[in-house]
Image (cartoon, rainbow, N blue to C red; front, side, top):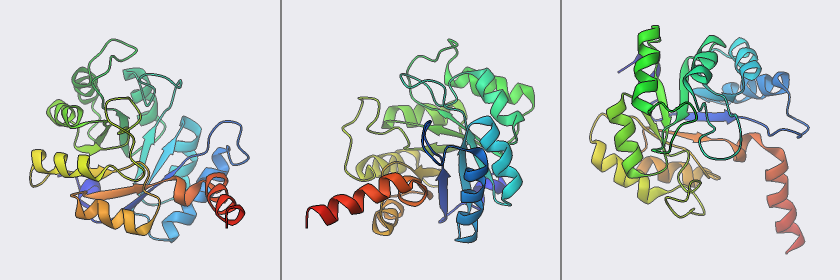
Length: 228
């Protein structure tokens, strides 16, 4: 197991992202957020966009999981080999990319993409953002060291659960077996849900919105207060 991956076992990863048009949508702000969550105990951070990756890697000492979202439909998380190469060049320690079985924009399969990156000489960990048990198993066969449940509930393959898809986590953990690096990501909104994800078999847990997205968090509280 890669040392960067081994260090994540039983730890929290924080996704530091803001959406286009939001007040915090600035790489400098995301770098400050990343530094803040590192001080709070995050073992790694996930950053989106090339300039964000550059600035976040300069601001933290923990590993940076890099992605590049391009588009809004279909495969858009680091969707092509060229996107992957750019994320690596920006300084990401761990590359994350779409790990579903959907057609990729450049026509390559996930396995072909990973093989090309290894031929390039990239020896860092690769995380596949999956949406189902079949995609998780296929991603593992393709050579992804980290399997994430990032896209569960977002592609139409599985129903979107209110919190993390604990049933899927348990299924993947059972099928991949001991030693698998399974990361829970998606709709982990409370410490209790994070703990439940670990109990379901997650090697590590990613939290994003509930820590780094003030607009959404404020909305949760505003609706609760208004409805009381």
